[in-house]
Length: 158
Image (cartoon, rainbow, N blue to C red):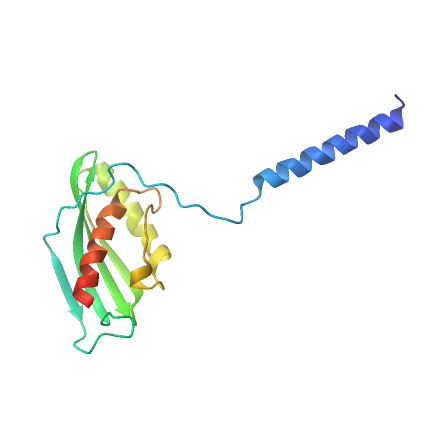
């Protein structure tokens, strides 16, 4: 094989290799949510639920504007855990969220704090009925308690 031909073949192989590498590293156009962890949440009822919603008629979305809070529970490897959720609604849309952590151990504190730090980016600006949180900032079990609290908040805001 001649030197110019060999260089052309090597250049072609290198180019194809580069294209394959770049294509493999590119983000996909379709995002698939992470599967929920097995045994993620229990169905234990919360002991605390409060609301400060307005006394006006429900909005077009079916929920009264205001701030609502509830505690949700879930089961972790360390046992029963509780997370406090406060949502502010405006026109059926979440305009603010505040999470109160109730850790029973350092592991729970870590995961609930990560959840607290990442939840606003996922739900603020979304309709209350469209909230679907499965994993936030590495915390998948806390979302079970969050979902339970959101269901209580929906009842309060009707």
